Length: 217
Image 1 (cartoon, one colour):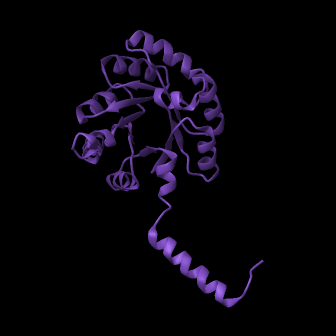
Image 2 (cartoon, one colour; image 1 turned 90 degrees about the vertical axis):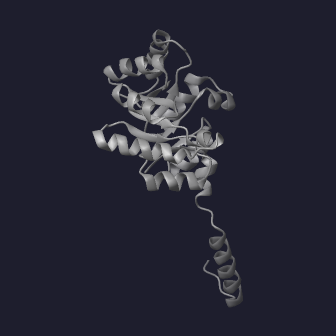
């Protein structure tokens, strides 16, 4: 499974990228706001840092303006994936971008029907928001499973990019179902290393080592 980092925090991206934990990055208007930086400047810095796709989102609401914004974002770097919302205007823009050879991330997906349309429009990635589905008392991972079955049935090349990841369990569930990519905040990715038994075992090893009176260095 590929790991995309869902942030515009370049220091956090660098830390994970140096460990080989970054296959791409996703940003959105909220993350750009949180970074406090200019969208073009920070996106260019991220693109220079990582070799995989970097999603940069349009903010226009009509297809014509989406296309104009997306084409400007695509000029930032060759590894830009233009991010569009999953509505009719977004699908129209997706088709235009895909026809020009640009990677497209279709975001805010909440149904399998939407995912089918995105694949037909040439999306490189479909981003189902599983955490937000959980918020309305449904199981967001059920949507990932439905999309996986449908895409496999018809050999769609669109990659399933599980988004709105809230926990380590979300990551594991998506891996078991067969999501191609998860995009998660740095904190979630780093917390995957944590386990109470690891901590307990390390504590015991260190206590026993201290009793030996030895040093390695």
